[in-house]
Image (cartoon, rainbow, N blue to C red; front, side):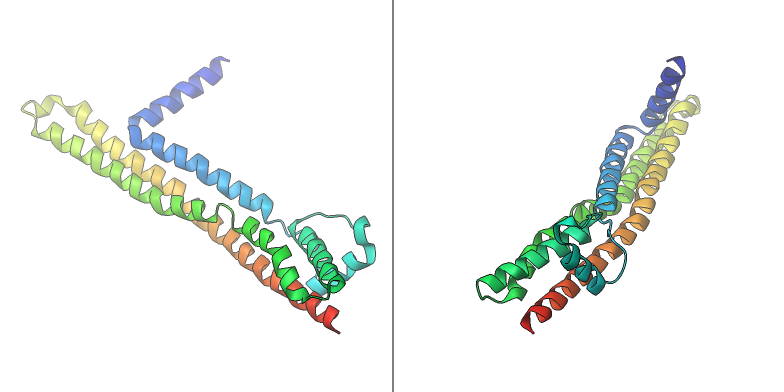
Length: 204
């Protein structure tokens, strides 16, 4: 318990050394990693292999197929949509697109949030830098500037801490966000493959 209290005190000291901007960046960091975590676990592909083989497996195994990822559920719903379209003598492509549209929404969830935080974090860190430098110059302008060592050091420290935390938030978010965006694009491409394969199969 004492160790937890010590770590907590050190954390509060570090955060307060950067002023209110540090808490804003800390909150943005929590939001960023929540969004990245959600996208990471959502964008799990599921069964390995090419799309055509995956569709064949679902058609062969039916409801007994084990669903291990987003793509498995998408293929299952696309097959059901194609059967429904065949039953009512309608175009299967439109039904399949409608069935896959919710999955397109799921794959893009929190992508805007991640990109926004990655863009804002360095700017907010820069704002903290400006505030810290203003405090430093205010201390230098004081008539007792030579006794203001703590104020000058505090201002510079605040400037450096906020800049550092802004980059710590933005850089990992930028890298991981790009990786997850690539996975989202891959899903969109695979959904188009599902539509093409199932609809052309039903049209034969």
